[in-house]
Length: 399
Ligand SMILES: [Ca+2]
Ligand SMILES: [Ca+2]
Ligand SMILES: [Ca+2]
Ligand SMILES: [Ca+2]
Image (cartoon, rainbow, N blue to C red; front, top):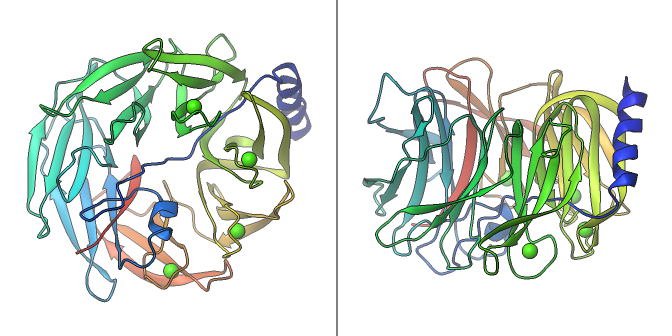
């Protein structure tokens, strides 16, 4: 099976030597205070500021914000009371700089019935007193992944979503005043599973990689941001990715071009290296296959090279970046699996720690980094009354 899979991806890679992929969930927040950051790299670049990490978690019925105390212990959590409580079937929440002047911004995408999202924008002051603004409902269903990023370069975060079988993908541009979003569609009728963003061609506009499990015209594709010219995204590269589960973008070989990591249910870890002009002419595959569900990227051993952390059916695996377009896989870096993973410096000692929402409802575990990429249990956090967790977002704040 592994060989067949490799043959498939290599074949597609060869046939599609035209382009590239994708993502880094960048959320660049303004550097001036007050600010919110969604990307660890943004936080790290401002290490002179004493940040704390906020965690946002969503289950089908609830969204909660976890906040640490002065000792970086996650002892406080706030519930975002669903306005349609009882009929909500799915929630997805994101940090982002959705408004220019508020302290911490959160958008909650709440599906209340097939075909309807009710996005809510929550903003707060320094004491975490939140105010909710209802945004125009979104007529798209089957949400499978979403990111916040500034696609039109107006200084405020937009939202891009991919959806399950039979539904289109959309980018919602934040038109800000009054708070609301206008919709752009890109891609059609593909069963999409993941989304990532990065400026893959370094033209100053953030592009999108939408990962699907389709073999048709809507196979996983890189969408060039052409909003400033044609008003939408243009497909520039595609690759067939059977059993794809998740994807992220990062510059793994430090050549200034964003690369893409893909993880599969029953496939190797795959890294596509960006060779420019939306093409990828080299990819790395792990020697073993894994039943992966989620992937996250951050430098976990302090060598300034982004490493790969994936959640699999047997536990948490780390692929350490060797810097030469190869990785060294450490299986069972943490012998725990989860619905998702979040990477950030939760204890504030300068290295990246792991946050795993346990499959056991209601508890999360934080694993502390020894700065070399070795992890040990740090604290357990009790929060939501039940899973599964649709997504976890991390953001940084200072107060
Ligand atoms: Ca671009
Ligand atoms: Ca690169
Ligand atoms: Ca590293
Ligand atoms: Ca740490």
